Length: 156
Image (cartoon, rainbow, N blue to C red):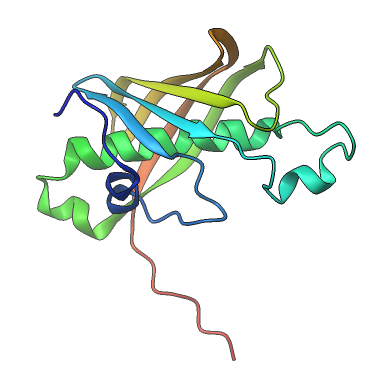
């Protein structure tokens, strides 16, 4: 796996998420045991309009989502040679021990780091952390499972 920065196209190629629900901008480092990514939080993001108007902060659940997306990117890279993986989508199946330590503000650049802990019976257990300006913002453990790709819902 490459150990250098990869552009956003690598993110788009790895996971199905798209704006406005894409919370990873760049893959900074892809390792055999994990991944480091970045996200710049622009002041123009729509969620800041309603999340503490006049004193906007980044919702913690969106920071968690950035960690989950980084984990899915890692899993996609790790398993891309497995032909059966191409028909699967990594989905969140467990969140544990989320700890929020600091707030993240509009304009901040966050670093998202995910490490693989273990794989058991198709569940991929990982730990993640988010930091900003050298300060730890969030730590958590989570698990992803691979599910068959679903057909788009048909709306009458």
